[in-house]
Image (tube, rainbow, N blue to C red; front, side):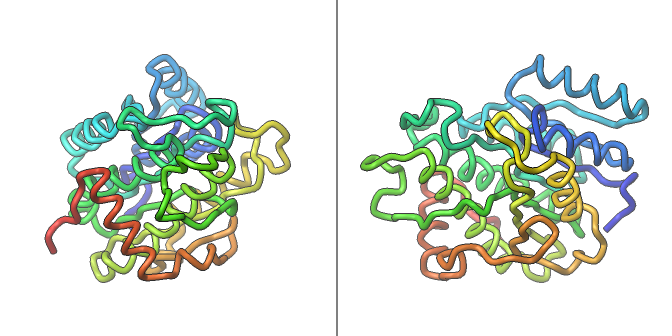
Length: 276
């Protein structure tokens, strides 16, 4: 990888919790950080906070609500137009099991189950749309912030119209992220673009968690490692539990299941893999 001072890194969901702390960490290391969120005020507060700690920080703000695929497309278009190089994409944005909605099933602007839409489908589409610039910037990395909380995808009811549970919706979306990671790593083999996923830490102090059991710095350390560690230059398609290599649920390594998820994702997002 290039020196950090020469790298441009997009962090989604960077106005709160892990994303905010990660953006600050990467800015302090010298990278140009593209800070994404869905609220302009929180975005500007985040930039001011980082600049107060790192006066020389190179930061750019991008607003998009990832519950809308149109806004995901606008985000990708804006980033691609503004930056000819993109060295790393960190798909961190997400929502938890009960916030928002208090456990009641909700839908995205496009009519998809909300947690599947925001935690997985938005990152899928954003990654697909940014792949051309990531390929041109190779060596480059994609990091998907997932979770140990995983549940198999029921392809007969992916949107959980029957028997909805916020926990199930969250866990299904997080396994989908890992399935995409494994699938995309195979597709990108030999291109210089790597993709990995991780469970950053357990119950960090974020707005998703009522009773934290880990410190935020643990999650930042684990996620930052996937972004910065030169020992991971050739590592792709892996799932990490913090700093340790780990295994996702069995379905993540099922080629048929991944193919079904790929087809579903392409159809829902109207995205298609770029030509080789």
